[in-house]
Length: 314
Ligand SMILES: Nc1nc2c(ncn2[C@@H]2O[C@H](COP(=O)(O)OP(=O)(O)OP(=O)(O)O)[C@@H](O)[C@H]2O)c(=O)[nH]1
Ligand SMILES: [Mg+2]
Image 1 (cartoon, rainbow, N blue to C red):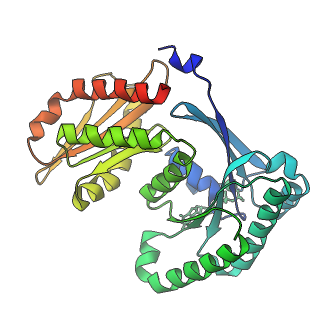
Image 2 (cartoon, rainbow, N blue to C red):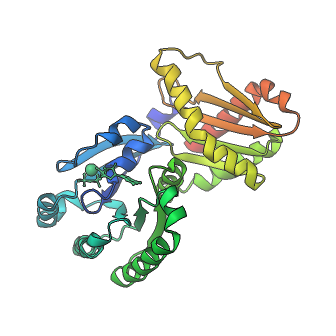
Image 3 (cartoon, rainbow, N blue to C red):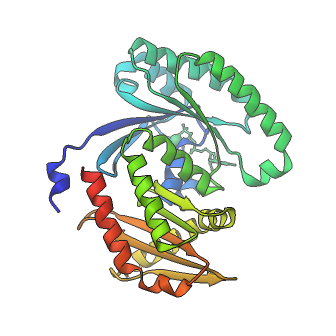
């Protein structure tokens, strides 16, 4: 239980930037599952910072409010705001055509600052507000906007490592998977963890397994087929929310789990503490065959958690 104290923790600076109203803070609230905050969201005044743990590292997350007056001050003081950035997340509102050129121009300014500071963080561009209902009704229009933007960004940032994603707060999984992929780039052990998760899923003979930390970061996943993938991805936010409800009621017990069943699919959701006083990890499992084995896999999960601790501290 002392390994985390002994183990040296690395701190990584993650920068969220982009114009005002792009949706940066909403993405962060969505990861924290604080949906009621998104409805009444106010523009971020200056920077909002938080520090959280990811596996055995620490993430220092900087959300730079994007109103013009703040952008001017960041660009004037790049040492304070941009220096030390290991990963940049640049959020663009794809529904706001009128401000796309302004957004590209600010991206240029940000890249210029990285260049001056002699740092080369990967640039992760989020084409945000790709809401499921809009994608259905205006698919071509959005695709064209994104295609055009991608071309322009590749030109502007031709010396940077670039990654592109489509996100919407109305598709929580798009946010979870995007931010997880971005953050796990920092973590070389992520592949070992993923391999162990796959082996564990095979051992359980389940069709899908999703392991998420308390900040909604997907530590690893396994899906045997598309329906298992779809069902686990879509259901995870409801299990997390139901779990949060019990925590708000002050009710939790080490042995508790949520079980659900429909049309031959059996779901098990269980929260596990790797370490006393730490935040929990959430396991979501789907099984089609021998579902009753699900009731008896507590020991298997515990053994797997020990293996996970072993990989993380190594
Ligand atoms: N349709 C849609 N609206 C969104 C989405 N994400 C955020 N919004 C809305 O966009 C508005 C601005 O969101 P914020 O998260 O405050 O934007 P921000 O980038 O943090 O803005 P600043 O703090 O001023 O830099 C809010 O009204 C959100 O509800 C999304 O995925 N789809
Ligand atoms: Mg904000």
